[in-house]
Image (cartoon, rainbow, N blue to C red; front, side, top):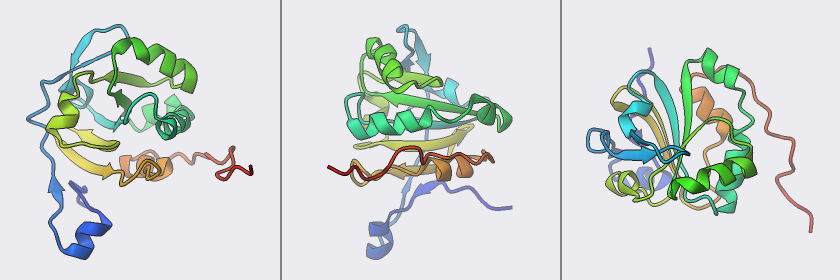
Length: 177
């Protein structure tokens, strides 16, 4: 069996020989996040009973984050259910911004906010992060190095155990101006 990836590996850390960052969720498991109605939920509730792909977006006004979440909205709920995986987006906004963002992106899966940025700060996040979690350990994380360095969704789903082939190619990557 292949061991899960539990640390951030970047090109820079490999080149410089610096150690990878290890993550522990114990420090943030009781932090509260909020659903679209402003109801508080402990962070650990997202992953304590099954694997979850949790994506922290920079903010709901970030254009590349909006496009990424639009692509996430194309993932069929049946594919996630079949793999017994929760797909969760967490933003850094007030809960009242969830509904307009979901309307704009057509995102149908779980979404929460961390308005005080407690989890972002405690885990040292500066940019968008993605975690695949099951129980209290992180199996994989990706830290964007810039606003266009999003983890390809098909790779993320494959790492999480979704064995559906999804086509995200309905929009051109380059716009001719």
